[in-house]
Structure formats: C-alpha cells, structure tokens
Image (cartoon, rainbow, N blue to C red; front, side, top):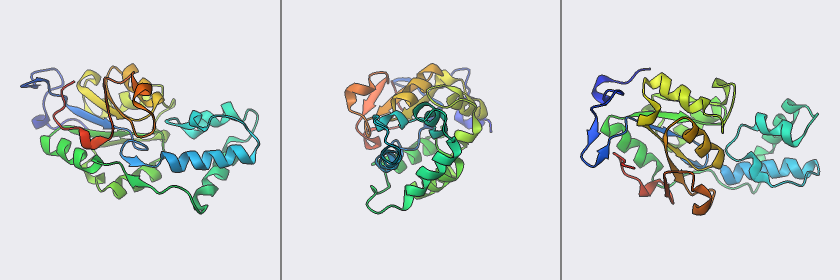
Length: 225
C-alpha cells in the first residue's frame, strides 16, 4: 500500500515547524504496544527448565523463536520445541497481557495527523492480529509485517525495510518504536530513527535508540528527534 498523497511526499517538503515531520511510524508489538514480554519470557523459561538448559532467557527477547531455538538447542527438532513452548500458554500464573500505557492513544494521534502506520513484529500473524485488536487499533495500521513475511528476523533490518517499501516511504522518514535491543539494531540498520521504549530493559540498555521513553504515554506526534 502506498502513501496517501495527503500524507506527504517521501522525497521532501513535509517539514514541521520544529524540524522534520516524519511520514511513517513503525511499531514493534510485544513490549512496545502490549506488555507480553514477561509472559513470553516465562514460557521460554519453562522450556529451558524442562530441558535443563542454563541460559539467560532474554536471548529470546525481540527475536523470532525459530531463529533462536536452533542456537539454544542445536540438533533438536525446532518445530517440536516451538509446539512445546506454545503449549505452555495455558499454564496458570503466567503474567497478564495488557496494553502498554499510551499505546492506543499514540497510534490514534499518528493516524489523526495523517502519517502512515506499520507494524514490524517477530511474532506470527495470528498473534499480531489478535494483539492489535486487543489494543483496539488494528484498523489504523496500513501495513503489518510479521515473522512469516521475511527470511531474516531482527536484528536484520528486513522487516522494517519491507514495511517502508510497502508504504512507499524512504526509511529515513520513518520512526521505529522498539523495546528490545535486536529491534533497535534492526531499525537503525534500516536507516530509521528509533524511539526506545523502556518497558523490558532499563534506559541505559537502550542507548542505541535516538530517544528513550518510559512508555508511550510520554510520546506525542508529530515527533521531532
């Protein structure tokens, strides 16, 4: 889907009063729009414990499970392990899944301003669609790029570049919102500005981002960084 003409020309001329008026906002999902990381990490920890693997579970954070599993469990059946970890979803006591403060409001402000909106997630499409609906903003996303859509997951920039291409936008005119280190690395490798959302990492870990915020309630749009 290309940009609506009213949303500006990626070639230039859409400068705000205080600086560059970015044409696109590209959001990560888990940990950025919705607080699912604690739940996901608990499920991956169950898998590690079940197989007696001593490892910092955060190795899974921000990356596609299918990319990490072969590194952690060399020689094992990847699909079988993915099915196993998915089977932990009904375990009692897992952390709740709730929207990140300010997430829905920011997405609506971006849409009201006329900027294009995309999702770039390491999650699968069904999960992404359900979580966007839970946040209440699915209809505002012009593009949704999920784990199935790219050959290489974050920190590779392929997902962000694909989203920008689908929106007809120059990556330098896009702002990515990310909570994870692989996500920030992917956005910067794509040539985009990046806002680090400190929901899953302390501020000091997110120094690769151009701006770090506690959550999305601290962000306005247009954004000038």
